Image (cartoon, rainbow over all chains, first blue to last red; front, side, top):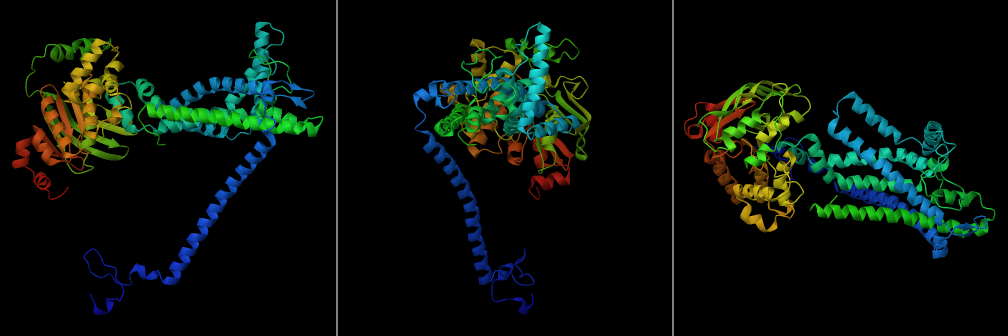
Length: 335
Length: 285
């Protein structure tokens, strides 16, 4: 401890209470520097805030335009009538019905396969095995494939190969070998498989290790543990996956373009082999194929509004359901 | 209780252990030879991948007594505990050398039914981990996994088990409530009840009171002393007073090696090893 090593400001002390050699680190923060640091802090608060504001603004503009342009059009007649006069008048009921039916069939197809695959990947497969890694890699890449590619695949695989094959095998004329709501739903299911798998795996990962060990320590088999402890706790997360795939499924046009969506149908689909009208595709049709743009425009706004409301409604139902399940388990509302 | 046990289908292949156990203990209730060792470890080494966690540990756990495993953090006491119900199997890259036996039967022999083993060797964890189900369903979980159905028999079993865990009077009015609404101490006793519901022979406890307040801790300790009349208990603890209060035998581990094992009073008054003395007198750890 040399006498000249005692600075006027507070000196840094080492563990034994002796002044450390050299200046205290705090002396680096001169008033000028501190002012500059405060300035940067303010600047970045502003920049990040502006970026957020920009997004909010876009959402408001989109929603505002759609609501302002569409709310007058959406009347009970519009909701429950067929399109009329070359789609310059009438309603969109077949498209609403078709969308709901399509999404329903898709969920039935995608949930079991997606959830079971995720259970295998997360609960049974060894995480370090090359095969597991390969499957995960494939799933992640499947999520990146453009949806139009899925549409073409659906046409080639489901309609041409599977459908025609079934017709030939059963000696039918053309029943399955044509675009149909069944094939469109399966194509959409394929598109959404990664969404469900990833969301389910996420949910499985969130189930604490202690819960699994608790079950195994009681002599539960792995399946009993999955069935009675892990899956019930993961259910809210699985529902999230379902929500995501529903909102994606309701809005995708490309996968159903060649596999089942119809430009115009005077009847509702009653069998899996029927074609169907769909809201997203109907929006595309109204926007590009209208004989009279001025007459079609209000219908276009109205259809978009209905599509948005339908998607939101489905999402809110699922979110509500998820919160209810969580409360039922006594887990609280926390994420 | 015996009815619940016979419902578990005995395996047709070798290792008729579950059957023998019914004959010797649960049904007749007759005392087995005191001092006979239930669990025994011979030259046990344990590896997590390339890291060795246990070095040549040998230890005998007498039947119907409490054995405490003490030692500083990371000394391998939890690892040792988890070899008794093969809970370490869940860890990728875990490897065992040496012999661990339960009633003379090698637990790591190929072909051992791990699920059945865990029914014979129950475990209570450091943090109470009740399932997000009702109190009743938590206790009924194990028996249900064995194939027992709902009904009067199950109700009786749940009541009896909760009484055994000294929890019945506190929860009898709200068996259908979520177990997560119980206090930490009650949750831990529920976890003990849950383990007892499958009528194990051995109960492993991994620092069962370390997350609890003194009152709840005292209740757990009292419970352990009650339970040793029926069960062989191995408890890992950080708390040396606790080890002194509840255990009959204490094993001191350090850096993966068993330093000393002896009757508890002896360990705490006249340890043979200098390391043990330093640890229990608080010179380190």
